[in-house]
Image (cartoon, rainbow over all chains, first blue to last red; front, side, top):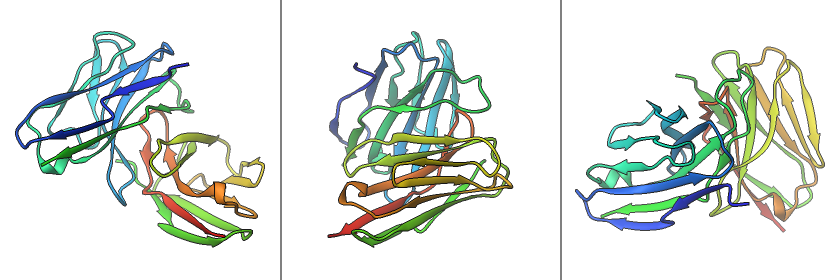
Length: 116
Length: 108
């Protein structure tokens, strides 16, 4: 049971570099999302997708791009890394985005990113 | 956007004692979810509350949804070292807005 798989687990970037955080789920989930977690601020939604080919911005989208070409994959791209993007990133998925009563969200194990 | 506030931010508990963490929203919530994150780990779903005044129990954990569906609480009885972690409330719907969490430490 792989669930939600994120890679890499740890990454150090220099300011201005670009990189992609990979996320894959094997549960045929419709909804996928990316969060960042900073001390004392909980989890903040970066981007989300309600299905293949559909993406939208969350609370803190600036500096990040996403795409959803398949149901399984939802990569997060940092275009030009900045120290303010040092954070822990979590990918998450849930069965459906269509219910007002919500669905259990499954999180990946996280990617620790440091920008120097 | 939706704002969910949690108090307290930190809770230091003597092993065996009870404690409660609270979650408040400025607007009515259609549902609320609770998650637990162990140190160094990822959030794990605990429970979802949907109905006004709903109370659900999971062993030593009791979750409550307020009558007005604007607040929720998590009460843990007889705290154990396994309860260490950060507890988040989040809601509603699929675009979860997370509270800042209550980080729980336990004194043996």
